[in-house]
Amino acid sequence: MSTSYLRPGLPAPVPSDLDRPYWEGLREERLLIQRCKRCARFQWGPEWICHRCLNLDLGWTEVEARGFIYSHQRVWHPVHPALRGQGPYVIVLVTIAHADDVRVVGNLLGDPLQELVIGAEVQGVFEHHAEADPGYSLLQWRYAN
Amino acid sequence: MTPRSLRGRAAIVGLGETEYFKRGQSPHTEFKLALEAIINACADAGIHPREIDGFASYSNDRSDPSRIAAALGCKELRFANMQWGGGGGGGSAAIGNAAAAIMSGMAECVVVFRALAQGQHGRYGQGTAVPDVDGHAAHTVPYGLLSPAHMFVMKYRRFMVEHGVRQEALRAIAMASYAHAQENPRAVMYGRPLDEQTYDDSRWIVEPWHLYDCCLENDGAAAMVLVSGERARDFPHPACYLLAAVAGSQYRAGAPVHNTPDYATASFKTVAPRLYAMARMGPADIDVLQSYENFTGGVLMSIVEHGFCTPAEANDFFVLDNLLAPDGQLPLNTSGGNLAECYMHGLGLNLEAVRQIRRTSTAQVPRAEVSMVISGPMVTPVSSCIFGSEATL
Image (cartoon, rainbow over all chains, first blue to last red; front, side):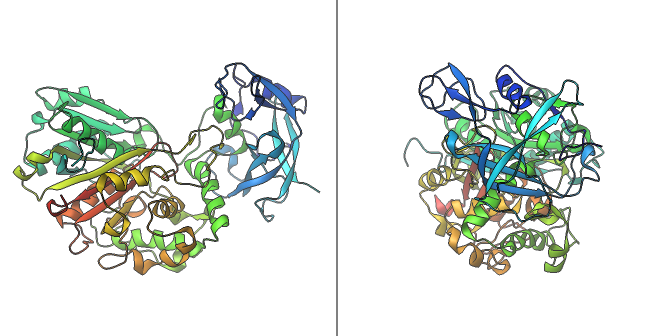
């Protein structure tokens, strides 16, 4: 019995030299976002350069996994064999206000038919795939209390 | 005429297509389909294929121009051009690139083409079959964000909510394509009309897009022949001049993992003003529009961004009667387009726009003098172009 939101079998994320600290952070239940060491601004997705000041020396800063739904989708048609029998599922785009409004993609936990509200506050939930080899973790979301 | 404009400097003198097949049903390889479309375009132009000296395509078309030129016995190859970017965003851009090569003297006779055999090379509508993903895809794919519909629908959902656009607006776009396809025997959906009830009852692919909001997947090829504007009258069909073709996208449109600052857009906000400036025209001058339907929501945002209506007017503008040939306010996708004629990565829309100027469409707009194409909304770069009759020069 899997405890993951989506059925097992989707492609697993593989860390690269560009985003390894992010994936290692999720395994420790920490959200690390790329941050410029010179202008101190956050950016996402990860890139080799700060798009604001063009500094090539970027670091990682832990931020609280809270945000707001910027947009959403409820998927019905399965386009991957692993999702056959899944039924509808929800993907959200979440703005992290305290990290310069970067956006991250995740699933919205709970009833897949629940109302989806742009602007609603959401709380991060770390979803560990320890059974995978190598293991990895995802960052999911639920409506904040 | 300003020296730094494509306006009137090149013309489309030949159109060619293969038969259009449902995906996987082409009896021919993708390369053979490309050859057939190009040969047909040359026959339409009344030229021998050996006269072609340039090729332009987009979306990483797999049919290599050098192999085509060798296969067709082209006397000389001068121009082999690929517009970067995926999806159909490069359709009108490839025409612009071909025209630029001609007006700059780099080539004389350029073919723009696109060939697809999704049976041979895999389907766009299916997710990746690999066991793992890295790079930017690692931040979306494990969450089930897999297909083009998933990549784009959150842009449209945000737009729809911000502006209060109703589902009926999307339905009108889908029904316009299907209505026009019923006039077009070449259309894959010829003989298969769509009514409101069928649309409403159709399954969701991803909310708010029903099955009929999503493009087809097809096998086939399309091609057009371009020469200089000066030579355009020397060919069998009425000349169709390129009045403008531009490509691009807004600031950081390609920011990874859905982080482009202006998110809820079809990517035409910087492109459309340059298009109209080059054509020296505005939305009121456009007689008929072909607007790329990967998904109907992208059509709606594209048309708004090209100035045909404001977001607040969308519910009133996107009603079926407004979108139908011959006398709607803005006849849209008059061949059936990507939803109902064929998904040839949108190049079929450009061919149809030329047919409107030639007055040979199966859903002809009377007195059509100016014809626009919007290519590949929501990707980056996107492109659009305007064609005109000789009277518009």
